[in-house]
Image (cartoon, rainbow, N blue to C red):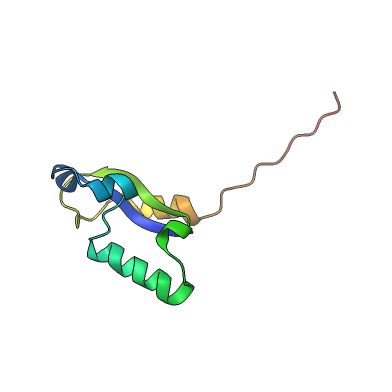
Length: 93
């Protein structure tokens, strides 16, 4: 499982439509994406498409693509911290 930071920024989505972005759901030309692909191949022999990857913040953030996401820590906590287990109820009806 790969946890990415965020999906997109308002400034990035204001640009003309990119066919690769539409097809892949990401921009493969971004340095971060190139680096991720190289690391996956080098250390795991895998491509991103062969993994489960999700974004901690799945919404469009305001500002530029490099803008920090204030909800990032909250998303990280929700994604990786264990959920409390609720006691199960069993009744003889």
